[in-house]
Length: 98
Image 1 (tube, one colour):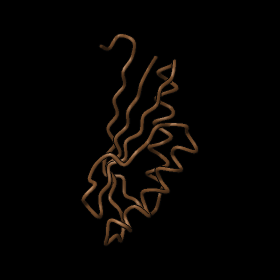
Image 2 (cartoon, rainbow, N blue to C red; image 1 turned 180 degrees about the vertical axis):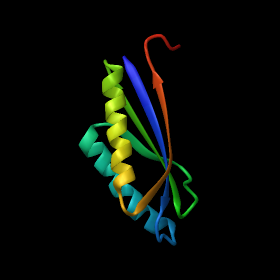
Image 3 (cartoon, rainbow, N blue to C red; image 1 turned 180 degrees about the horizontal axis):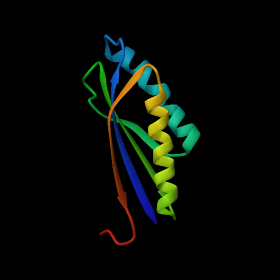
Image 4 (cartoon, rainbow, N blue to C red; image 1 turned 45 degrees about the horizontal axis):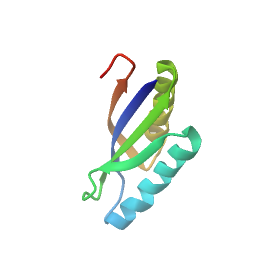
């Protein structure tokens, strides 16, 4: 079993309140869940208006599949015009890790 985690640090466009931030981030989180069947949540920068940290995780029997799913998730977020992807960090755990 392999577990992959992806942290996406994004800058939001013209957002002036936490309510506006939620209206931008929530559809992205929902689309990631729906399209890729991953666990995803807003996981950081909760008190900042223009920043969000989106966490994505995937579990599969094959490390290559986990990597492919996380790659597609990253590309989807990077392609959103209302977001600027500042950084993406990835971690992978496999059978040899304890």
